[in-house]
Length: 576
Image 1 (cartoon, rainbow, N blue to C red):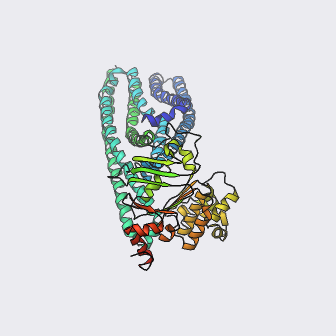
Image 2 (cartoon, helix red, strand yellow):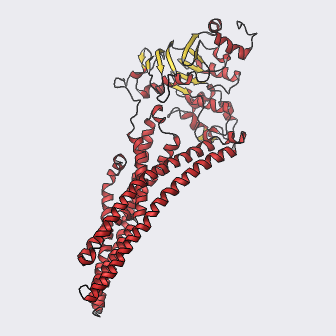
Image 3 (cartoon, rainbow, N blue to C red):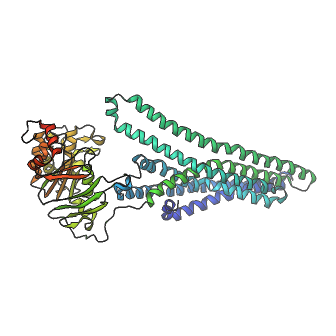
């Protein structure tokens, strides 16, 4: 909570101004019943028109002053709440950009989207309403009781019985409601998750005709959200009749005792009217408490969820010994007894890997699904840190490089290419901020996508739909490769990134990029691709079985022989 609301510090002055203007409104609201009592006692009861006009004019003037204060208060309250929301979204975004993959595993995408939208908006609205009316409600209740004692202590003593009971009851409701709204926010996360997956996989859903199944998934999540929300709101709304019942009893008691004392001549009629007005204002203020409790409960739940992200420690940072001047030059990569285990996995996904890739060498990596190939790739740019062992680049531990330096030296094309909405030229130049058109065209030509782009109606300005929905798999892969090539990386890593390409296109691509690279890693399932590499690394269940040339693996590895046989048949030379 403190972490989130610390973002209000830059807005102290406008917040104080808004608060003071709110106090002006509060003061006017508390003074009006007092002046009304004076007007009744000194003017109406005595038939004195001058007193009526005087007190009436004072009340009208105060009401206008309060109106102007309210308008200015709204301006400053809006400034504070919108500025707070802007700052906290900025900080959230920067924090998430700092997260390692391990950090991101703790927070599903749907959860983070809810933070940026629903949770921040909830706190923003509460801050605005707090500076506008929410803080005024409890002060009216307190001020109304105090002013009632100023007017007539004997009648006001009724408040000493009812108000403490109501405050205790409200605190209990607030505590219960906070936990309930936390469940509501988690239900919103689930709805967002289902919606996100559904929209992203719409083509697959239609192809498999799984609309009914997806509708059931959404209905379950939506029903859970509805039930949690309905139960929470009913609980809070149920407190309202209790509050009003107690306050109405107070008003009846004031009328009863006030009438009795007025008849006995011990209390002025104006005092009874004034205290009755204060009772009505206290009742109205307390009637707002259910709304306030609801807002504060949701805000508390939202603030706690946001704080969890903001205070989470990033577990992958530059090493203290990292040299800002150290650059990747030859791109020699060495694994020394490397083991790796994901934070949430039960066992290691890579075990005791040791091999060296020399500068200019092309290494193909082959293995079954789940054998640890992609995990191996994620260790080289330090997307994860190794659990045991060491990775060296140019004979220096990768932790001795600044993360920015290390990653700018690497071109990484993931297994599932991700393109951003916008023109093709922006997607390619995303790999290098200051890329020239000549560099963009060169990268596209090397990736064998330039000719295809030039055939499109708007060529490089062709708009790409969300995640590249209007492109084929091969086109998306080649644009992703062009985006990596434009960086002119010392190390290029292709994670099965040519699977959608035909053999001719793939051969042209690999030939085009060979001259501009120091070291190439390529994960592939195609023997035709692997056999053109300098060496092949064969891994299975996270362990290195063999490393060598195509001919060497054919001779020594039964698993490799079976893979070759499955793709080329038994008639392939050296397959027995």
